[in-house]
Length: 357
Image (cartoon, rainbow, N blue to C red; front, side, top):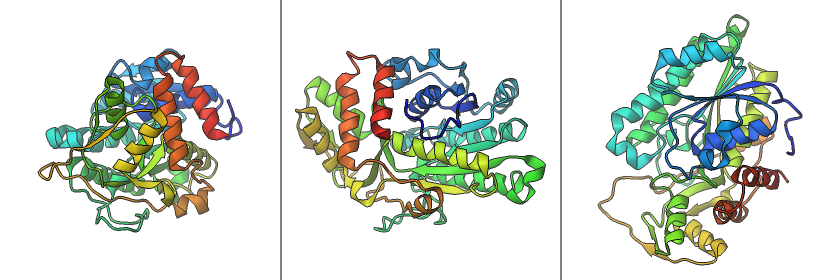
């Protein structure tokens, strides 16, 4: 495994919430390859084809724990038992359309769950760095052509987006109230929030996401129904933001009072594209398939335009995206074309190395 972090993660004790999820499983594989000791906290994976299940990463990490982040006392007990150095908080209810069906649970998980993790960090002396993962949808979306900057207002039309805006407000409050950089000598902790664009990659089977929808239709030999063909999103491979989160955590460890704030990890503007364009590229790489416009004027509201400004991470962290949209989709489709007959853990490691090269 290529190590762009210069052995920083070797033997570090890293707690990952949501490690059974799409992004969490990829992060756990990467950290495991770098020699980290991983404690995973999550609910059961959604399907038996999830990247977590097929890669068997749960068998390789130090602790594979089933727990709900809404249980604050349980979180504190786990933190005290395992004494992590760094926390990556990814556990969430991550779906816009599902949030219309379960708005209260969405808020309980995303807002109170995040607060519970921050309280567990506060109660555990060993934790030095906390990277709290929210979303690009945390911003009050005015459907503007300019990308959102880190200091733009938070908000959200749907329960999911607004819950993530509320998360950001809570993280900011806890940072000022309990993890203030000016009092670092007293608490010894550095807390940041990170926001990524539309993240795609192998092993994602979630409902109402463009890649899983495309792959399911391709495997079944049916047309791909495109619900919002003209919706514009900042598409990026899952490894792009994860590389940013890991770089940020390293910098926070080394200079704890300089980086404890919010950060956008999105693609370059040439990777901002419509859903239809992305699906067309998937078909091209897969080698077959057809698209069908199934847009419905009476459908639930979803933002049609969303972009991120990434100048801050470029200038202050030295992070830039490694792949354009075509390279990204090629890597995504490669996973789905090979997962049935290859060792999925090794397939993921191979894709991480391809990404790093």
